Length: 395
Image (tube, rainbow, N blue to C red; front, side):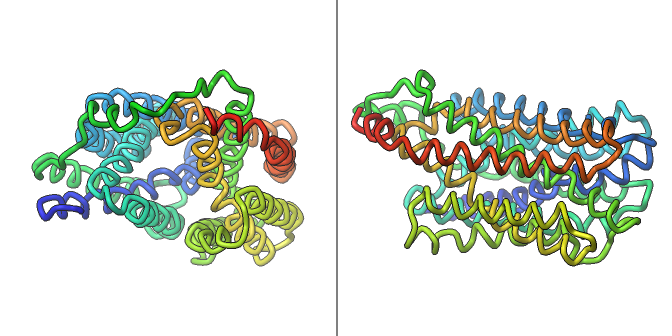
């Protein structure tokens, strides 16, 4: 049970997770503003994505180092400071400085998200799943409000106020966390003892593991691609910046979070594979509507369907990974998460590159449709390999 001395820390961690939801998806919402400010074409705008995602990989690897030393609180503090520094640098007058800001913000995200997840899990040993659901719901709320927040606090050429309003609470949270009592983090020796009777599986020597990782590569690429480019795509379709509350981007993230909330209901009646097929079909339908939409209404409908469909794919694929390779698999899942970040980098950059070469962002967005088709192919392959999965479970 969460102790009294840790309640203040828990509240701060949830606030940080809410703000990190904004900073994580901020890139897509400020992209049109930065493109106008620096006179960038779509290919040049796409450089912001590799900058942030390479920072995220760096932060994730750093978190692994802190985790082995049970210093998740320190990782969270450094992550808050890095996100504050990164978003502040985004408002610099130089393109290079702004680009560096996205990299630093990515480091902060890579440090903060996994470390806080682990902290909350260790602070709530008897209700870990419930605690993590609430924590990640806070992240989702941040992602939902990001677009309206940017619309309210930015101009067509400046995001200074936007970044200031994000940096200040992050720095305040870092300072408060540093002075609060630390939670009783589980010693590494105890973790090892808990799993000493579990025979490890050579996960990354199997084709099944790399297929699941490839699935993650493509899906996270899809999520990042639509989250990163939908605002720009909406503005192009409308002919001017869209600042209404129920924009397609807002609807995408709203239904993405709602989908995660209702996903447990589907699992009462459907297997993981059936849920994944249903999700992918919804994503396919949503993308077809997005690509053929002639107005904001249909674009909003397609975005909502895509968001709802994509919502439970990542956690379900992660669950498939742990169900296949055993309870200790999450401690050896780094390649899985790295593949996801690489997929995000590749797809977001590819959209900008194709858009610039073809002179049409609509043509480039077909890359997202290709992602969904590839996911369906991979899902068929994974669903038809129960024998290998059962054999691994017996090891």
